[in-house]
Amino acid sequence: MRAQDSSQVEDATLTDGSGKPSGTLSAKTATAARTEKVFSTGQVTGKHFSSIGLSWKKESAVDKGLTAETRIHRNGVWESWRDIPLELDEGVAEEAKRAGAPAFYTQDADGVEVRFTSPTGSLPQDLRLSFIDPALGSSVSSPAPQPRSMQAGQPDVKLRKDWGADETLADPGYKTQPSIKAALIHHTVTGNNSYTQEQVPQIISGIYLNDIKNLGYGDFPYHFVVDRFGGVWEGRKGSIEMQPGTAIPGILGGHVQGFNTNTLGVAMLGNFEPNNSEGGEDTGPDPEPSEAMVKSLADLLAWKGGQYKLDPEGVTQLVSAGGGGTNPHPVGTVLDEPVISSHRDVNVTACPGGKLYEMLPDLRKQVAARLG
Image (cartoon, helix red, strand yellow):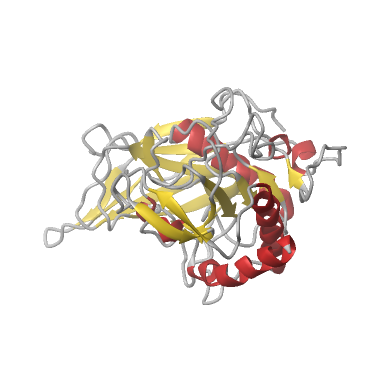
């Protein structure tokens, strides 16, 4: 398999600076009686990718009813259509230079067709389709056990190199902050919930490449990622090392609009919103995180919570940095929030999904039991 290089993301332009279709994109259906339009890329083949990304100009107006779906070509067959999560309720992080959707995991593929349905017949400005190919080798997918320096209470956390982070892409140095006061839980909605353990590094690397190369983040947005097998992965650089009273007292994340300061961002790999087909498969009425996933999340929060002397069943104050969009709280607004909260507690969003959100009270109890 090819080694990693700087050509891991290839872009195709879909609209110009005014939002008019460009490149392969064209209006597929339209009627005089309705403003709704369907735009299609047609079948695009001859690529190699494991995730796709959709991004657009950060300041562009976006039809809130805009939807997207795709079908993938692999092994000589065009597969069925799947909904792409645009996550328009997520807003645009301050750190990002472009707006866009989460990386959409396709597994290894060589062709794609994407179509957009817009109730108003409009598309975002400078809309791009990106083909993301982490090109990970088997040594990364199944990292060999290595002796590692472990902090007190630290669970087994896989390093950035274990998922194949290209460190030349991230901003140099660390994005430090004074401390951590709360943990905010997310879900990634990057693909279906039935991914294999071997696919996890490729999915995480796809998030990294999409957020840095397509959306303009300086690094991975979340501090940590937890997969459905209970694997814990370091996301943003320095998240393992950060501790109060050290040279890295805290790492500033890029996971939530207006509330990155003093918060720890942990993303659960999957989609936990009931009856949601975004990501390729309908989650059904009860998409609960696995027992292994919840256990590892509790272990992770007990470790970091213990370092920062957080009360997992307590309440803390978070101050809004503003930003508009999905953050309805003006600059300087003080919120009283549980120490273990979620994205939807501070922004207007469905994240981390209804089933995961329902588990937060029990999660707080589990973390408190670990801390004694």
